[in-house]
Length: 304
Length: 313
Image (cartoon, rainbow over all chains, first blue to last red; front, side):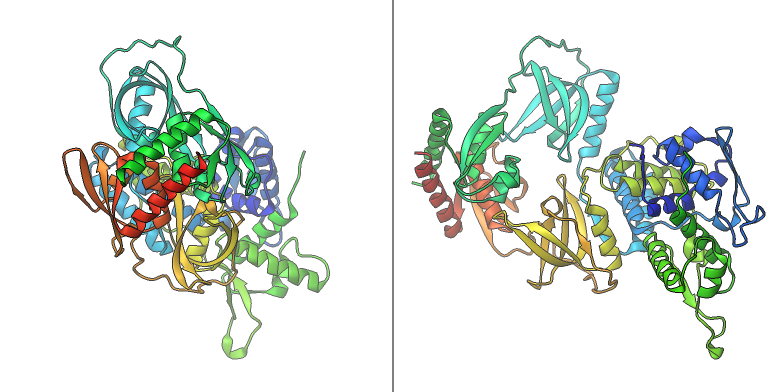
């Protein structure tokens, strides 16, 4: 998102980077320039007006940076001392190195030459900062790309998906609609032909996915089974894992107090309550308490 | 409306002056010639000290030296083009395209600002990006944690950090850490570092840090060991043996070191890295998992189940 206000230090950083950028992009439109730097046009105008007052000591027209932008297109002259592209900060290098790691993850589609290039570039960057910052390989990127291609081509995908609610891997045919992020986790929405309803899937729970050749009909009129469950529970012990599992707000938790638990699947709710080992006790639903007891009894039977 | 930031203008002018000079500029020369330094000498001194800190925080190295040390001249300042300038070695259009694609991975995530400025620098190098040579996907990093950049910087600078961390019992604890490494795994970011109070290596999940991370100004205050202990439990000496129903318990199976297949149940062996986590995972799987060993873990599972039964009775 474009920025509407910045601190003097952020502006300084931008001004120092503006000069070499303009020297290699003479005549760029003001709108494109603002877009490149992810700021509003007004902020970019302020930047250019500030830069226009800068130069070598003496500050006569001979020493000042010469900028022209009245026409809506920006040109720069007399800016030799700042013509150098500024060295990268450690965070910038980390951003690039981790991005390269993710690119290499998708090695199935890479030739040996590109793969080697990425490795060399990542090493070159890491050598400069000497820091151990890594991202574990995952197949998210490759899976995401298949779903993304399916959305673009409007074809369904055949997918093996791990459902944490039921602890099972299932095969499904899904027509994907769009991606979205929630709490740093990426999901996609789609119509599941196997269960004939709209469903939400976590990208990191796709076990395998490929484009489907079949033409599937979408029965959009059928109701979705994903209805939210709300149940009251008592906080018996303060437990971080239970709070995180149910997305409870820290300030709402006090010993002996009540909280409302939300879930989309009763099975997931029961499992999460049992996993909490008594940190949360269901109060509001006799039916749910009965299911929890039955679940505990069948587990206890294994130990007798 | 035209607004000119005096501070930004002064910082840019100072950078130009120090970068353009072939010799060291003394403080008095700077105050006399660089636009923006005005007022009482003490005020200018304070302003200059702050400006130096600000430029250093932007990664600009300001060198302190004298014209001729034999005559003990007044020390002066300069920025050498070699330290200021980006030098990534020889790069061609494909390299620029790959690096640019890598930078876009942070769209909407923690290092978006840094990746935008990195992209601008790459685009300013005057090398045409050969993106047509690439048929790669845009990668995507998850994680919007605002402490991310602060911690990565602290690792690079070898500076200690302090933060409030949410304990397993939901209390906030102040931790002082020498940060060693960061890794992203299963959608979460983890910091590994030496806990100064406990004098042992600890792992922290970034989203459990509940305050802004404060970074010590002291740099190079510790060394990072060449080899850090493995986080996957390879060095762990405690094992659990579980019986897991066929086609169930995927999470536990993915962590197993050994699987003995059976007819309806498989027997898996896994390291006990975090017993509380393991207890939770076993309970979550209900009647699809039985603990065989160790007896203490089996006892904890049985006791938890008994307690749960009473509480929901």
